[in-house]
Length: 171
Image 1 (cartoon, rainbow, N blue to C red):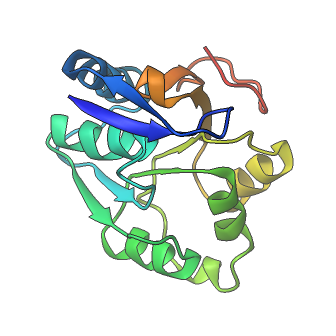
Image 2 (cartoon, helix red, strand yellow; image 1 turned 135 degrees about the vertical axis):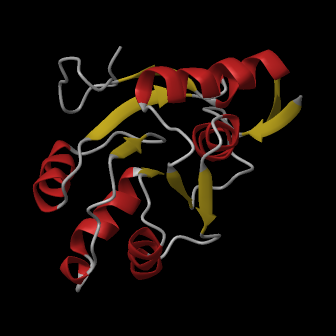
C-alpha cells in the first residue's frame, strides 16, 4: 500500500514497505484496543501524515471509524490549544516535545480542553515528570507506546483500563 522512508537507527534512509493489511490491522488496534474512537470523535492531526504514527494513529484510524480530524500542518502550542477547544478534539497523539510545549505554554489554562478524552505519546521516551505534570494540569491520561515504521507503527502501548507504569511502553 505504501512505502514510508525512514532513517531508523542507521541514519541511512530506507523504504519500509507496508501492506494494506498492515495499515488496516494497525488502525483497528488503535481504535479497537487503545481508544474507542467513533463517529463522534475528533482527532488533532499535527503529527506528519507522511510518518506512520500520524498516518495510522490519526488519519487512518479516524477515517476507518467515521471520525474526523483537524489538520495543523506545523505544531504550535497556541494553535493546537485553539483547535482543541474550537473543534472539541477528543484525541491528541504527539511526541514528548509537543506535550512539553503544551504543558508549559503561557495562557494554556485559558483554553477549554474538557472534550479531550485520549492522549497517545510515541516517537521518543516520555519523561515521567512531563507525563505526571501534563495529567495533573489537563483532565486526561497519556498512553505511552512504542513502534516503528516497519510495524505500521504500533508494536506495544499502554491501554485504558489496564495497569500502567509511567515511563514504560505498555503491553
